[in-house]
Every structure is written in structure tokens, then in C-alpha cells.
Image 1 (cartoon, rainbow, N blue to C red):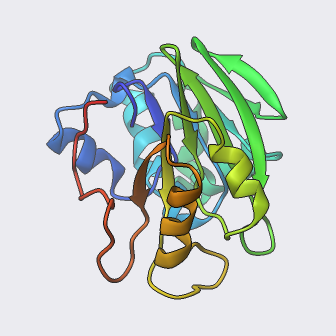
Image 2: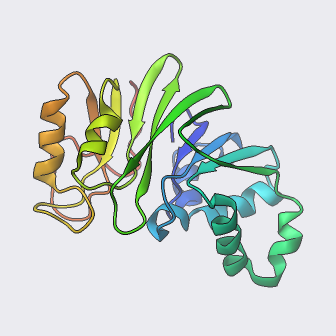
Image 3: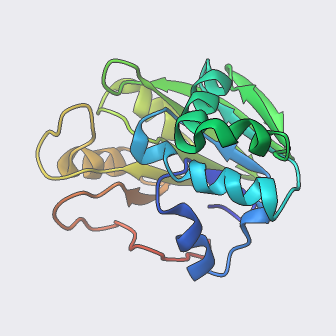
Length: 207
């Protein structure tokens, strides 16, 4: 989450983590979704329940092509026959990201990243005059360098040592950081091992 207003993907358990950090789930204005893999989306099932019944403020989900169809299918699978009634209470707008756009005061550009067979949509977000790059998941290919080029801050996945399939390895993540010395990196999605620059669970960072 950025500025308690913007959510970058929505893995589980999303709501308990928000509550532990004192972040109001109802204050999220935009969800930027990079791809549809479960570790980036399953927390949204509980999030939309909260937004349908507790905090009914409007919000937008910006994501890859087909975002509305894919998420509505996920929510129907999660909530079954009750989803239609819940859906009537949910004030959500879906937006396919495209190459660039603007939402809730944030200008964004996208970069198509290499990740598995379906790819991933990386975001370059201009928030409060600062440029934040967020990769979601990506292999160590040239589009990832284009994503972080010139960014002040970069949130980039780094899964484990070596060359994990369709993800960034530790050595590749550190090499990326070395190629962009003026960018401050935050490494996430660490599944195994310990990496310099990796953020801790539930860590809040002022930048």
C-alpha cells in the first residue's frame, strides 16, 4: 500500500494485515493489479466483502486486459450464489490499464513484463511528484530495466537465490539495483533465503 490510498496487488491475507497496521480498507481509492495469479489476487475476495458491506466508498481496480471478467469470475467462485446480492452493494469501477492513464490523481504508465506464459503489467506511478515503479512479478529481461529507469523508488520482486522459473533471482535483483544506482529499491516476494534490501512483513517505510 502507498499513502494508505493505493493498493499494489492484493494477496492474502490482505484485510488482517491492513487492520494490524491501522490502515483503513475503506480509504483505498485504487487497486493497481499487475496480473491474475492467486498470490496477487486472492486477498481481494475479503477486501470486496468489506467494501460491499462496511466501507461503501467508490474505488477503482486498474489491471491488465480482461480485468473485470477475471475478477468477477474470482469473486463468484469465492462467494457463490451470494455474490450477485453482494455485487449490488459494491461501488467498484474496473479499468483496463492500457499504455498509460490517470486515476485518483495518479498518472501511470505500464510496461509489459515477462512472467510465465501470461506476462505481467508493471506500473510506473507518479504520486505526489515522485515516480514509483512496481513490477509485480518479472523475469530478468530488458523490459524490467525500462520499468525502473529514472524511478526514484522501485518495488521489485526477488523470489530466491539462483534462477527461479519466471521470477527474479537474488543475484539478478542486485544486478538490477547496480544498473540503476539512483533508484531506491525495495525487494518483495521473497520466498526463500535472505536478501539485502528486502522489506520485512508488515513494515511501514517513510520515503
